Amino acid sequence: MFYLIEITKYNNGTADGYGVYSYATLDEAVAAYHGKLRGAIVNETYASELCMIINGIGAVQRYEYWERSAE
Image 1 (cartoon, rainbow, N blue to C red):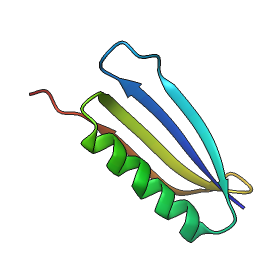
Image 2 (image 1 turned 90 degrees about the vertical axis):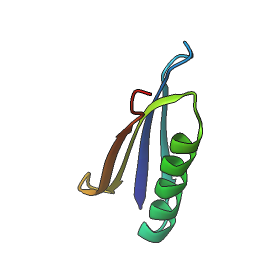
Image 3 (image 1 turned 180 degrees about the vertical axis):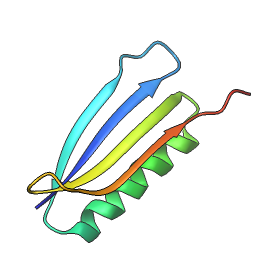
């Protein structure tokens, strides 16, 4: 079992978003991980996105923090 942890901060006053999603395989979790990061980058209301994949015992498999640059 693998878990995708997501923390989203917005730049429009929306409350921060948090989520934990479970996947049976690492490939499924990685596909979702990249989808979450892509979604954040293309959505102008996202200020930052933290995505992390951990396995069933908490070992980090993937980790990325993205922050929108100042225009």
